[in-house]
Image: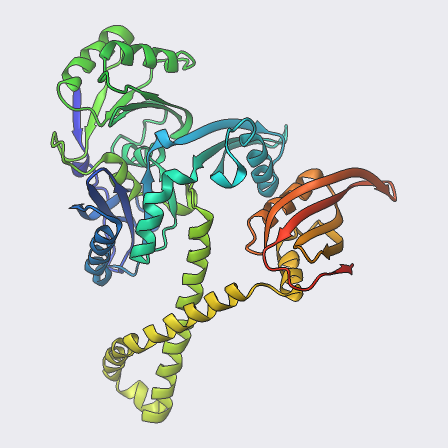
Length: 478
């Protein structure tokens, strides 16, 4: 049995002199808020560094939000920017590995969503999903994909927290991927194929990796019975049956006495010498490995889940910050023009320090601009969309290959759109975009047929939906 402690394995990281972009990973458990701030290595480097980690005992969303704001304020002097991610339990998600006949990213996303939702006992607006491409075969024009599906209600505690804290996360990362990052920064680079066993609360997760990419994942409940080594061995045997050869196994989340009982059982039954990875030794109150790993994940290159409401709030926040930035720079240039000449600016660089202090004093006033922008945006949303806004929404949502010929809207709000697309998946992509629009609801494909024009086939379609703010009935022919 081999033990390794995570915080002693990140010495490969060499921080640069420039302020880093910090990733704050978080997790909410029964009685506390766990926050970890990590900095990735500079371009071309390896590993990452844990900057801060803390567990806050908290009872409600308001208290946790204040803890998060205090944590962020402590980080700001040491970061160029701060981004937030959530380490989300793997057991709360349904994972589906699918091979799809396409190489196009948009087609894959549409096809994966359609196939993943098949057989789910949930309405479409009750769940969210995301897809990532594992590998592609250009000769067969096929892609191996992984789709994650999560019920929205399981994210409610985080939604309430982010509303209170006024923080806009980049997404929810499943603990399997966060733990993969934890293992990747802990084990030697030469290890590409391995099995990972994780224990959290009353669940065990078995993940298999090939070339450090997730290829299989099972989450198994042990509710009320404890972690029985015999059952663990049988579940491992089942998962490892498809593996051509014995792989290294890494274990996280195991505590005594399970650790002492499991190690010899794995060795005798499966011939596996497991390595037990502990974040901070054998402390049961230690920061979970999944949160530490999430702090070292690149959000742009990982499978991320984000509720539509948070996407909308993130867009509003970005727009608000852009307006604040414009206002600040306008104030800066006005001060430059009125108070000094260009020659004196270049001769007296020390004035820049004073200017930065002025910007700090301006920030409370600009906060008023921010709140005004929010009120204006909210009031415009409450007023509802006029026909021109509806047409603009159709133009923005329609994929490039889709041709919209007619659009009509009845006084009751029922809208019908007719047009053509080169493929059915392109038409379904248009439906998917309209479903995510703030202007429409209950958007469905009500009809489709194959037509030929100049020896080229295309799909004629009809889409029906409800306008959320249809005030002027009428129609437009294109």
